[in-house]
Image 1 (tube, rainbow, N blue to C red):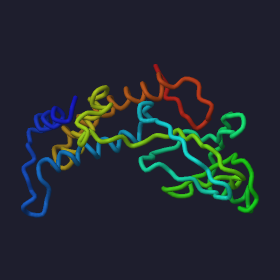
Image 2 (image 1 turned 90 degrees about the horizontal axis):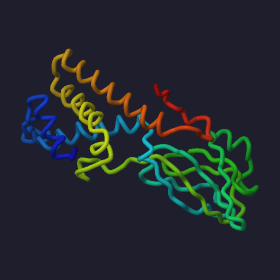
Image 3 (image 1 turned 120 degrees about the horizontal axis):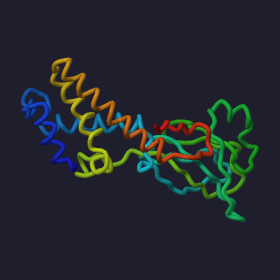
Image 4 (image 1 turned 180 degrees about the vertical axis):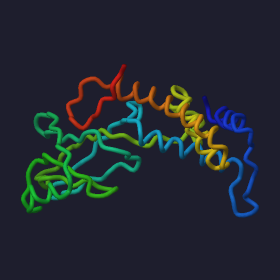
Length: 220
């Protein structure tokens, strides 16, 4: 389902073309529907860990600099590895809290090969210990993909349009202040679609994981 079809389907289901309210300081019809869809996407991406929304990048940790930049499209961490400059071997860092890093490596001037990392803020990781040399790093992470609103198509629209459709209908019908029983029906269909999506992404597509925090959704 592409974006044009999604818009038409939303309008048909709720029997509302969402007239422009821009003249009174509101939103155009297109802006209203785009907001419904983007809110639905955001909700789904933060509930389900889709394999298709995971990617990796390489970067550089600089000697004596304990901070490493976070990608601009970052959503959640999966793994971070330091690549040995001599052997090329991958050593995966343990993900901890900032207070753990500060306690375990209290002296930033004491350097070594990083073994731990923490989210310092939305823009940077904190490494421990402080790197003693320049290291290549490989980060696997979940990211926010381009919205179907701007890209016209998306993985969700092509492969699991039911979750995207009913998530958007929930947003649209809530905006309309629609009847509770109809809203409940949309919620039920959305929950069913989301359950199937979680079963695929966090069940069938996830077998053995090295990290204990990678929860596997039970598959019946």
